[in-house]
Length: 313
Image (cartoon, rainbow, N blue to C red; front, side, top):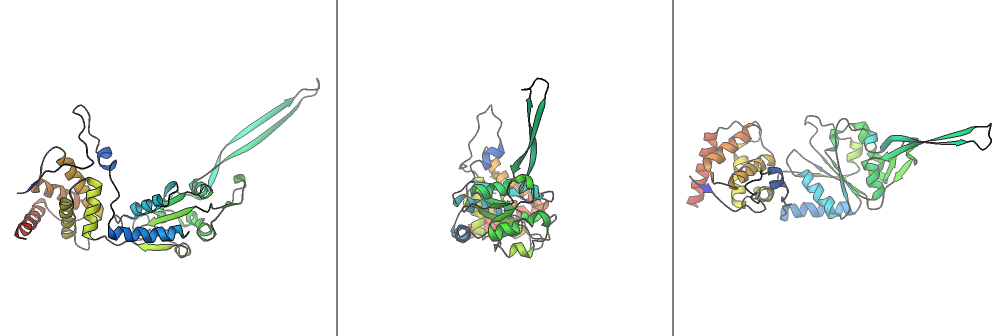
């Protein structure tokens, strides 16, 4: 039975009198993994984005769409803001809305028996995230934009085509908002057959370059898992292969399953060793919750067989 014990890069042990916070320990030092496969995708996305073309990453869950979109946005060198699609999202959440009003009163008693008063009401307007990004020249990442309804997304037609945001509310001051030359927008979406996802209008898709995000190679996935959790590349590859081999096409798990198994394993390795029995238990719990019909014994048997193959090689 093999055991793993290794120093965890980026994971620091807390003092004995402190409670360990896994959210800070794992996510705080996570780095963006990049190899030739991901570099090629980044270069293509950056090329189109710098040319002023809206780009769209589409694919099933756990393909790294948001991570790639955020990395491209960061490399554009402008402030980045992010908006997540939702069914309740409305036009005012993109453009802006009235947030209050101010009243200014003047009372004139210059003549003793005459009283004159004036009241001026000013309506206060606040730009929403899309309008603000366009005015300031920021990069907007619109994550899972097809979770918003078609009416709300319809306002993007003129934004993607002419760089103009049409404002129908007279309180905004301007009828149209012209995009700053540095304004860029990057979108992501899941397939329309996912729960809560609407069909992407053809008129919108026609105004952007869409990248279909397929599954990364096992080498790339293991590199991402290692970067996110601090595990060694060898152990990360073993976890990725385990997930891929034990989940068939009908129940294919996203890369998040491998990352979750690796995260739990990394927590164990902070203070103790990780046996194949424990790794099998972790993997079975994670995979069974994702529709993969597998037992701890089956995972342990798989790990034993792969370990024998590695020794034989």
